[in-house]
Length: 183
Image (tube, rainbow, N blue to C red; front, side, top):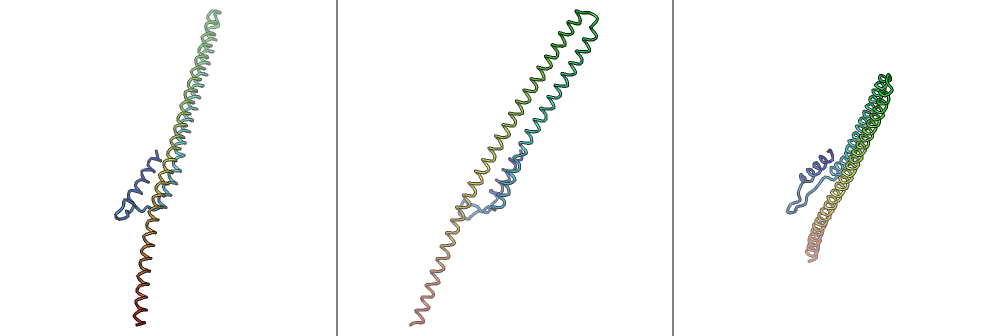
């Protein structure tokens, strides 16, 4: 399924990201991640299209069963006309044609019910699968973004401490200059 390929690509993006030295953290291109999540959302309808294709195949089976029933009925009617010569044979033909029609109807009904059951199961499986994948990808993206947020916060704090240290050093240098000029 296409969604699994997209998840593999997402994993590749994360595993190939630049690493922050001395940590297990990495830098990930947020735009690439968001683009991959959008692609994953777009691939979910493919799974639903597969289920719709199964429903169309169900219709073909149902139509075939109806054609078989009509053919069997036409055959039975022709057979009964050929046996009209004898009343007993005619009675038997009528009974036989009714049995054949009933059997054909039962077979058609059974095929239809089976096709509907299978189509429903496939649709349900596809929907459950796609919903699960969306939840998983959303949770994965959320966890990744939370990790990125934490990394960025750490980096901002490090930069702030560096700037503060530089400002303190500059102020100390200015105070020494003022003291040197004053003496």
